[in-house]
Length: 113
Length: 113
DNA sequence: CGAATAGTTAGACATATAGCTAACTATATT
DNA sequence: AATATAGTTAGCTATATGTCTAACTATTCG
Image 1 (spheres, rainbow over the protein chains, first blue to last red):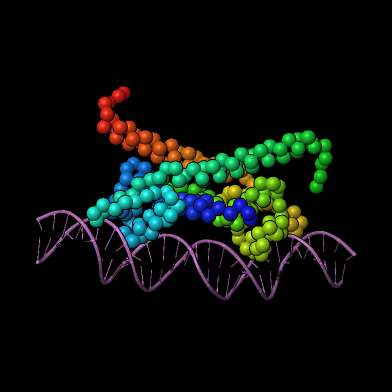
Image 2 (cartoon, rainbow over the protein chains, first blue to last red):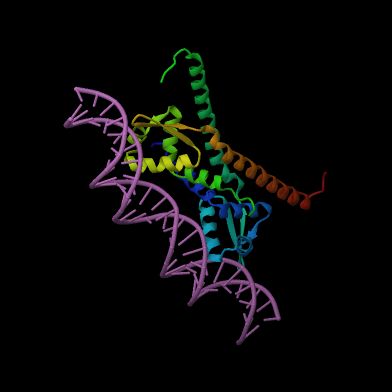
């Protein structure tokens, strides 16, 4: 619909993979090199690189290369759009439910089926 | 790593598609039949059904069939795991950043606390 | 009954995703 | 200079995803 938002799609897609969430968890402790991230996951370097590319496109991490090593670091603020979306939706949805319940409660006089 | 959670993957994946988010937005107004959901999206019924299956697997909506029509309704509480995950991560990540900044600041100026 | 309506199932198809190996570049280390 | 280390690029494979059409199963209605 008119509610199109490429950022949200990239963000949620990036977060939808357990390996990527594991990478983020690892980076929450400290910035790390690509090899450091590959170790715990048991994946090959090129595979990890793909995940890093997805995370970076979503804005969730930034990388910098120094000599032959690339260091990856979290970008905490990148979560904001997802949080905002969830907060807004949930509030709206629950408000709707509340109104519905109020309506049903008021209309308790009609049996059916 | 050990933080594996299939629910989160299903949830985030379900939310990663703009069409599915549009369906959720439509359902936020009121429960709707499958055909009602197909209309605005411009998609065919089978396509919409697939999206509904994804959303239902993620727990985001529930459906019930009455006669020949199926009605879909939101399950607002289903967003909770995603919200919790985001809140926790973001808090932890920013706390880490703060500690880092404090460290850098302390390293260049007089120590406090 | 017979036709219209709502949904479902099955299958085709193009693209995307997640993983791999092999081979290459660039930087340290010895 | 020779070798080891860190990363990158290219390309293969299998599976998943999003979309469609066609054909089938109810249900409802004139």
